[in-house]
Length: 150
Image 1 (tube, helix red, strand yellow):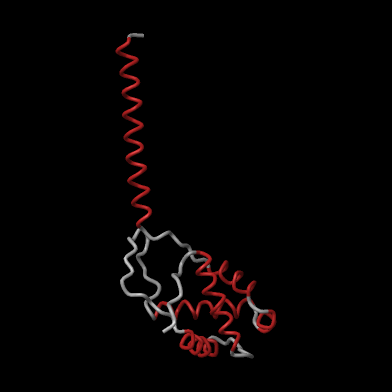
Image 2 (image 1 turned 30 degrees about the vertical axis):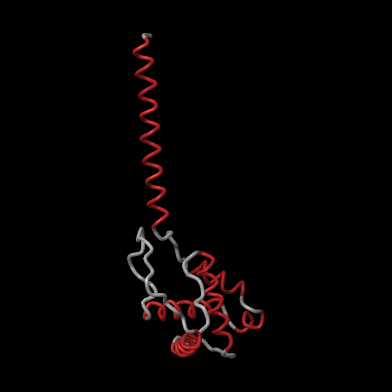
């Protein structure tokens, strides 16, 4: 092997390394600027919520009723514009914070429970389900921090 061949191999290896380092660095920076991919799974959400509910609430609600309340909560979020369709690889540019009002949500869930045939024996159950559902969103990275109290 000639010295020219060895020198060419070394220069080629260095060039490949530099190109790879630049590409990996650029992609790492791009991925750092976009929202992480969050996958919402209704079955996983129902299991999570049912598992963290207080025992009294667990005793009063079936898994199907929990699932119906979660679907109602998702519907409410959609009505409020909290479930955008195109979020994959979107740069995070939150300019106006969105605040969730727990009283309005509880009233909506009580109305929807009645409409969906879910018998609520104690109104506090919908509050527990909503809180646990927000806990699920937080656990999968789909919700931001709580707003400061005014």
